[in-house]
Image (spheres, rainbow, N blue to C red):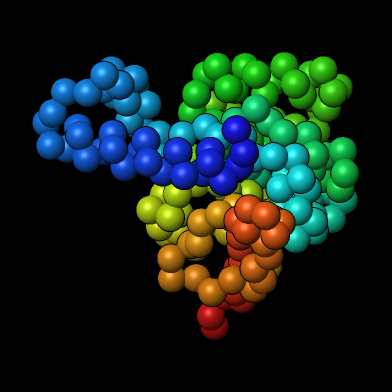
Length: 194
């Protein structure tokens, strides 16, 4: 399934599930929806070329720490360490994905440079981040924004795949490719006001 179709399907399923449950109507996927209702976005893996482009835009320096909020299978974390010699921290709610990410990190022998935390990204301590990577929905980004503003230091880069962070002006916007045209948004935390 191509990335554009995955993207549309993801949004349609979320919208349909939310509307159906909000209306109190039964739906075949309601039990599955309720199982994941605490998540702010479903797991849809980013293609490796998108991971590479996001990290290229954020340009982590060796030794900086990259946080991937909703890290899924750990591909961003692994790429950040292998390509940029960064340290990496992932936050993931789904225990199965935490296990999958941990297995991939161990197979790559990167367990000393990467940490995966099981938990809610809206509760995570982000104070150690130099770069934050997200692939959430616009509404999820809006919920996350106050936490980013409170916890991130000036100069911290935030890169978001496909969805803007409402109220923020991107430093740079890039397209993934001409065929699919998904956008990647790069933001930088401003200096603190005196």
